[in-house]
Image (cartoon, rainbow, N blue to C red; front, side, top):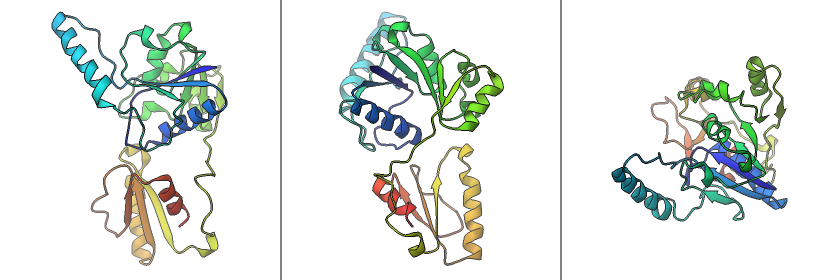
Length: 259
């Protein structure tokens, strides 16, 4: 089967949890004999309106195709080399590869997928959040009603969809744990007093409240060790001492979780 995941951006060096989930599925699908493509909309070019604009667009296209993403490799995740990456996109619908299944992965990509012909694949929509809560909302709630096959990673997302579309079927596909990468290496009984927390710049993640809680903990229990990790720069003015790991590898994350 030919499967095409449509994703909004290409991040060569920045780990993102939602992207990692999709990449993990892509790896599993190619191992089961499917042909998997991931199409990114990062560099979709607007249709040219004049000859001068066409020249500028052509130069930009050459830069993006030959320089910007060379080599086309994700450095923070071990993606199977059988997974095809299409990064230098144009908005011309015919440039999307024909497939049996095409999967929207965000409200922005859902709009693009909705406009594509049946030859681009039967349309699915993988929901990992309610994006209407984000600072930029691409009419998320309306995209749930496009008639795609909906898949949600959590029960609360499924319930949120049913709040607006009661009759719409939503398949629940909970996230998984890769026990090959994340395993028990330090017995709980052997662990010291350590608290770890993910730091995320998006306010909806609640890092602000977590840091306030950790400050209280550190004040009441001075011997507690605090470990923070994330993709953003080291937090400032927290009011307590802590270790910080930016863009931690899977092996480092496993070590942190085992503390």
